[in-house]
Amino acid sequence: MKKDTKKGLIVYNPNEAVKNRAFIDMFTDKGKNYNLDISLCLKNDFKDRLYDNILFCINRTRDLNISKICEDNNISAYNSSFVTALANNKYKTIEFFRDYFNKHDIKLSYDIFPDTCFLSCEEYENNKLNLCEYLKEKKGFIHFDKPPVIKSVSGHGGKEVFLLDDKYDYQHISFPDGCIIQRFIESNACDIRVYVLNNKIYSCILRQGKDSFKSNFSLGGKIKKYEPDTDNINIISHFINAFSLEKYGFVGIDFLIDSDKRIYFNEVEEMAGTRMLYSLTDKDIVEDLLYHISCSLD
Image 1 (tube, rainbow, N blue to C red):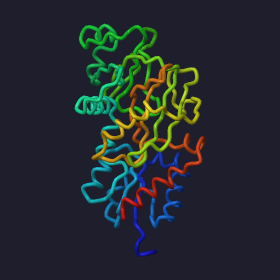
Image 2: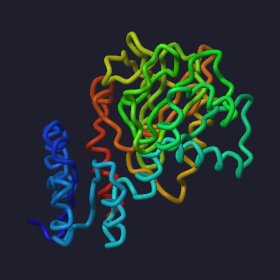
Image 3: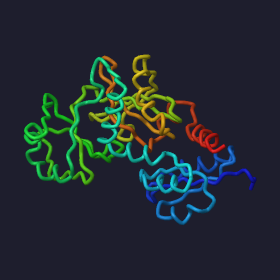
Image 4: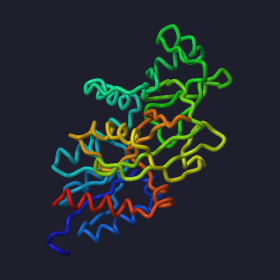
């Protein structure tokens, strides 16, 4: 092994590692092009592997503690614990960006953040049988011209996302980490996934839902490459610049888009998937991420 080879881990939960074996192999194989010796580490084995001259860690667990332990031991983490913690809590993400826009006096002709309220697990469980009334009377939430959206603060991939209408039986829904309720944005089930690498726009994909208001590719949605106009690129740049002191490694930022091409912030996917990129573009995100990591370590 070359003296300048840098050792790193790609960390997965055991069940996710099985499903993503081919993706993991791409990292281990392509890492050799940059003298990066990358090996798979299951989350349960992480602490045992930590002190094996590891210089960097690609954290694919959504567990901020993995990244935090790395940072405490001067090991570069992708993504950082700050990004991991924030992006895996939808309500905190919205509040972070809303606060950034306010502090920097960023004003648009419309509110890019759909009206949102947060309910703890206990608050939701105690009021789910008369939720609409509770939202109106106790939370001041008034947007019922269309059924609002209710979603877990920690869900991903379109899971644990529902329309809040009277036909739905809420008794079987549980949100252990709490939930948010948002004003429904008429988007024809379309959104834009903005892939961000090293705090720059990497690629944009338009997704459209199939037989659902949700647009996730994993749920059967259609996809195509998308080029945002200048106005939307400027808006997206604010969301990237908000992390100027805390660089993204690789994430997806999702925006709903209406018929007038206005975009509305939806969420940040910290552990963004890559199938859409490989399906629609000639970009190699694994190669490009490894190049970024290699340059950051030099």
